Length: 217
Image (tube, rainbow, N blue to C red; front, side, top):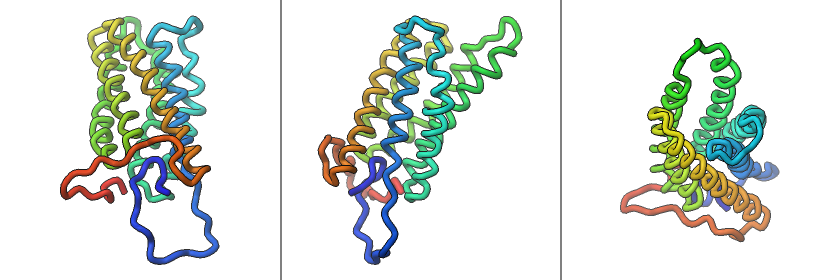
């Protein structure tokens, strides 16, 4: 069956004997993205009562490193969509954590940190916009992840630029929904891969006249 982040491929004409198919790395990448997004979004929503940086270690270790590894393994699977998505957001988490750890402590007094964060989020919003479009060719569950993430990033970068706490809080709440959607898609990838059939619904790719499913490869 197709992996989580790719459309169904045509049957191969030549079978290579003795080489097992690699496991689908997408459920790991989605789970790493979901958990780190959940922790940061809960903080943005104002729900946490700790340091506010409970997400930071997991941005390095899970959302960053594990997701980046999933992206590298998707290159091995020749899945350009999954490789690009996981590698980019793995880099996002590592980069954001490095910014918090290295840049903010040394910033000049009075520096507008929220403006920096607004530009960072805007840059990833641009990336996410075209990945949202291409997710139409993957499946509906992946489309839902990128759609909710699009709204999250939109609210956050506008909130950071305008220094509007309510928009950042709204972005945090939608971010929690994004995390839940990614967790569901990850869970579907795990159980569907184990069962060899669709146990949890992920939906079929959107189809358009003249569109090619090979667009995601």
